[in-house]
Image (cartoon, helix red, strand yellow):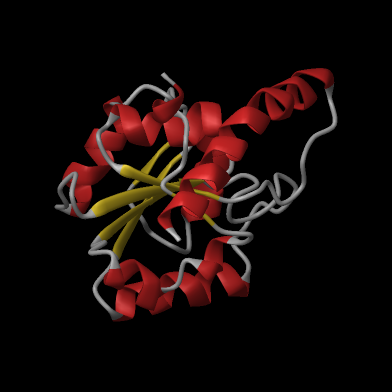
Length: 169
């Protein structure tokens, strides 16, 4: 059961999963969460660092799509300049919109990866769809009770990720 929640990769920041790393593991498509993965909730538009990273991926033929549980107004505004295939109110951890995004990208389960900041939505959605997952810590973590509770539940999963990585060394 725990396997479903353990990310395949963990980076401190989204752009640490650079084009060189992604191509080295055979990635041709990246499905992205937006809020607290690429930008904080408070940033309605992608910053230059996000655009530069996306351009670096495009330069090596890696295609990207957005799959977010946030509403259409937020995602449409964020994506206006980017023009990526995008799904709002995606219902993660369910796989339906992850699979639709893969279809838009023309990628397979073997060459697609999903990146997000939440174990119980993003990582779980990736694994439900049969693809790999990159977890990044949230940019600005909410401090409400529900979020603190979810972060507490994530601790054993992150511990398992670290244990598995130590075994690989």
